[in-house]
Image (cartoon, rainbow, N blue to C red; front, side, top):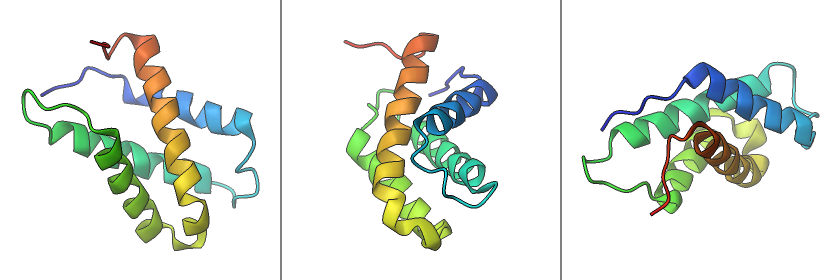
Length: 104
């Protein structure tokens, strides 16, 4: 399964949403970007791992994102749940806006 998504545009969109929200302004400089980069990589790897007819499972993707963030950024593990939920919402908004996903 291949996806034709401009990952740079998606990264900027997601980062912009977090910045506008302002809930994670307390993070050390550059940390927001590092976490978003991790989440984008984990999510992309999950999508690439889907079989040809596989469906994106929000719960499975969330678990992968959540565990990856907790392992890679233990100082922010108390925020992992909210951060990952927001990421999934922001990524979905971007993909819908780009016409990259369809609702059946």
